[in-house]
Image: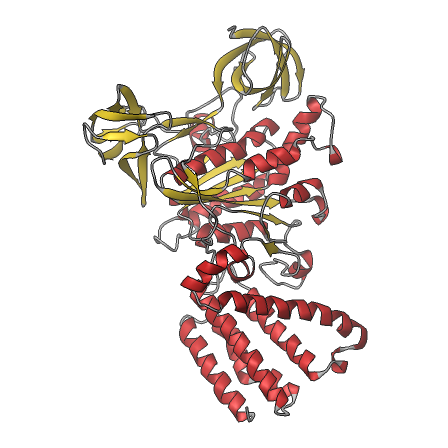
Length: 576
């Protein structure tokens, strides 16, 4: 197989070469500066390559070298706290070498080759091990990094294994004559194998009331969060990263503006992990691929992030993967497709847009690893539709794949209602599968309570049309009470301050208590109405104002109990 060739044609990031005989998705080095690229199409003797770096200045006749290997991610100790670009080059290392501007053709390994890690074996000489089995551990910050036997290993006995300090390239063990390092390499476009996939029956608890109660996401599930500029996608994703009960966070900034990515890079290290009290970065991997970086690397970035997430899933961890945003990824595919002169689909996107999106989202799963550990990758993909138009192809194709849709609404933003998740257009298809977990771990009536709250909000939406035409005074008293109850659900329950030390995170048992109190108010209000009490007296109970402030109090649970007692006494004062 020939590994040396020459450039035949250059069209932006797409280069055509002759003289090499590569396989699809082989990594090649292009031009005198050895720019990194990937074979994406083979036509006869011509190899079409997408180059991950700026191709300015390269010309036909320059050399092309085939490595014979696909794009791989380096997996091992040192991933956590790292900041990579789309092809897993560590950005802080490149900055130390070159300053603020990265030169072309410069590379650095994804994992530090010099740093030594304290390896503690969990198997001994003579033990029989299988693919993916944990053979030792390394302490990486507050996370126990599990070193696994290579997935390619069928079954074998441990010939030797060492403990002590090693680099990721040192041989720590020999299994069936095969040397084993702490570092693994895995092709990013191929999903890592698992022994079994589980049904999505455990929710990813986020601490956001509107998500956990109304539109829950299962561990191993996929969610889309589309919204126009300024609706709070990034703040919502940061809240999910900080408070969800995932143990590892992989954040992919895919084609975002430089200033937005700068915010993430500066704010994430300052965010305090509520579980450990340390920096959130200690259990986070960041992939920064801004909009001014080459589009080909943007296309690769989501696969790199997913492979890292699957690696931690195989250790038995619950991983939350944030992709912000998949729209920019799709735009990169559209640009490369047009350079390849492929037949365009809707709005110029390639015909295989839906296939690529499903390939990515379907790698989300809760599964049993080859080594026997149960872990999950939950994917939350932000979509940035132009002008907030949810009918455009990326949003619509995403909705056909994911089972949770959190729709961000510009009208809610204008009303200063945050998070701006619209309760009438959002949905979750996991609610029935998760109801058993909620009944067992929260309360038997929790799913029914959620259904009741959704009904009230839908009735309110119907009544608002009438109110706009004839005014609220013309409504019957029962419907006026419905509007008051809906107002409680919206303003007390669904609104949540992401920056408040108490309200930013709401445990699931507190969510149940708050919703139960609103239901109690509704039931007592109906009784008061039947007893002839005026609507104004029910609507302006002092306990309602106390309830409104309770979620911000330091001793919030005690305050909610006091509100409960106030409801009893104040409704009793009305003769109920």
